[in-house]
Length: 139
Image 1 (cartoon, helix red, strand yellow):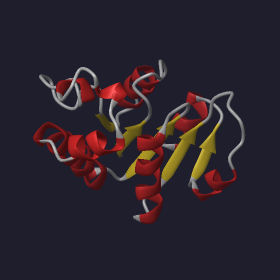
Image 2 (tube, helix red, strand yellow):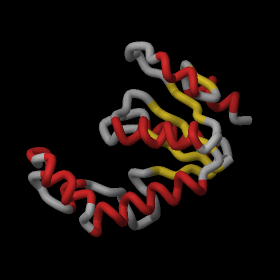
Image 3 (cartoon, one colour):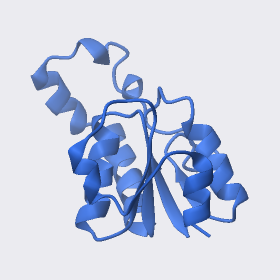
Image 4 (cartoon, helix red, strand yellow):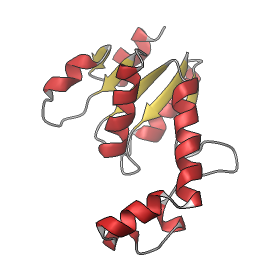
């Protein structure tokens, strides 16, 4: 299966999930390492002070060629993928990506953590309590 792994740059489990899925024979898009020589999009490529942007600067940053290229790469991978694994905890981007998969009627698998419950996760194809549960589903 071709899988898009959506998560956060701060999620320490993300890389292990990618490795386990690949080991199980799946083709996996890893936003941290989309290609051999590409280590993913970083706002700091546009401006090292991005964390202090105003809303206007944020809007301008989205129109920057580096941001457009990063978006296209990730969105193309979403269209390529048969399904998505949302690895919690994660933030806004990963949740928008998960929403795309639900809207596109592609399976969304959510890999839980110890966070609070979320009612809208009922849209997922399956909610997994751990990596073994996920791998068993994807056989």
